[in-house]
Image (tube, one colour):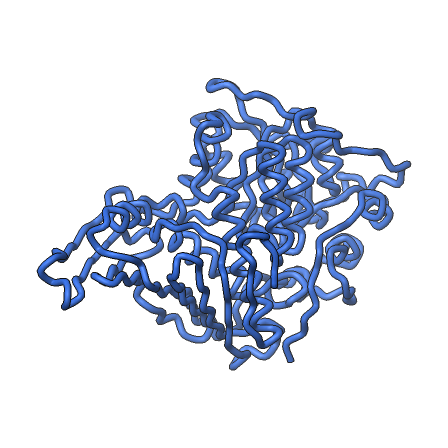
Length: 444
């Protein structure tokens, strides 16, 4: 029932271009990205990231490339904010890439780009526009690793939507690449920029509340029509104009063209882990910040099932337990059949810390009875609490300008979150506990 098919995301530029057949931008692009030129293959990537990197001063304009800028999707959300704040943040779009020609054209019109600034092949975008400083990646999860690594190797800083990637090993490779190329990476978990979690970390780190022993969080929805089925199956989409063969390239097992897979890809294991990869990063990343211990997971178990929404492969109900070397445990639960989740809670041996997620900003500390004479109760509202996406984007751009700063959802946090998520996917699909060697950084 739980297949163990995995994807590695590896694709050579030659293979990539072999599959992309003639489509000029005039008839082109949208969800995910690649080149339509039937020309001899060129080596588009520089030999080192330093060869393409530009030192950006405080007053220099930041040039943006964007892979997967679907205007009606998450890519469009980012594009709107970047355009809205373009003058204030001193940023400018210079190129976009997307393999679905319809979405490419829509984004081109909204952003106001010329034909030669729009590409099917994101690698061609990198080669044709060396002036790009940062790349936004808002594509399906199974493409994140390859696109992120290619952009880093080209000397670009990267904002990649959550999850960081699909699987465990690709997360480790991304982290190694960021550290080697000395680029800036931000994962799109905007909760990491909410001051609520940083305030909780201050409280815990004060030592007043003892040691963290476990935490619990959830992300639940109730979508009677089927989670992710709200994405329309666009009637104009075809196997040709979606470049389906390119969409499928990272998959070990290929599938026939399917609009459901293309537009509702989070329902299928080849491209996503469903609740675990789409929703849990929004919980786990802020929790690790709040706990103040951003560690590799040691052991993960998972359970759940496909209870009501039978038109998919990923479960509609899933639970994960993650153990960490510092001897605390995080429990995550998710459902798309009932939206009543847990009150977000971090338990120490001396107190229970309850708080509001998603910009709520409220923190309540309840002393444990044996320590009531040592711990004072607390009710606090954190000023400026917000999970606004543009705050998170601004945090990334500030770090691009000032390399002494570290993004709130930096590669260390992003990789450690993704390794836990990837282990959870394996644990669920293979019905077993999954162990990770936190010293050698590999699955056991």
